[in-house]
Image (cartoon, rainbow, N blue to C red; front, side, top):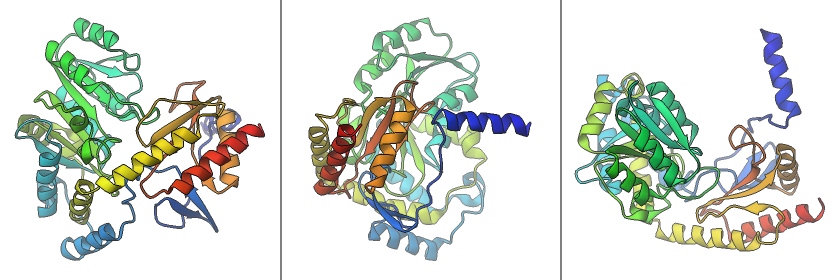
Length: 386
């Protein structure tokens, strides 16, 4: 058995698919330290630069002094404390996927999506999902034991054909901002399909919440709301902390509370985190300056990357992917940038399809224009020297 595992691990190394954990010796931010060296990091999803903001650090410390460091039980036993309840109310009002929506907190977006899909669908039902959806939506569909139909990326006609042929209850599941491509799902069109085929629309807005729609996320960006929408937002990216939430019609939320195993059987996240996240939500609400600066960085990067020999995907979000092709090339470029003090991850299969390995440049409001110029200059140098 060990020989089989070791053989598989050797094969991963040979195919340039090996991954290693980096041990940071600093707080998260645009500048991080690994061992004794400092890097400008384009690798995190800390889009608004909040992960190490002193206001959040202070709120977390205050929360720990007041509420301790552990919830001690699941939400349905004695783990649900006042900060959890207050944060859920604020998130529901802020995102507002429908009139009178409620919200429900989770320890991670992965757990939240498992809970949503196992609540909405079962063995006799059909989940129609974009081919580039995050793995947790795929895993949620598998855990629900529903029929899973994956349509080509952003192909609305294929999505409609799948809905027309579907049996049982229908669920459309989509990322709002696709995590490796940075493009947006056509949420108004998907909602129209949901209305036409009496389907739920599950929206994973992990990379839109805090950034789009004046911080309220992708629903606000597109101006859509409906009782059919079940919205998932994460709190460990633009909100700078950790966790996730689901916002939807109260009947959906209550059904998750009563029946979803990923919620019922999980110890609640510490109340200190919910306390800090209430402060993070205020910073997101008031983050117009950060979002404007972030947009200027996106524009500067795209302008500086125009002459590069690799494919810059169409994205107006902080996720800026440069598709280079094979895994070995992506690793080589990433290492060359690292040697210049710039950390950009090489994304390889199975995270992306074979032949589309890429550098995933992730921009943050904590970056400067000089940081972006340094990155585009370094990329041009690597391209010139092969």
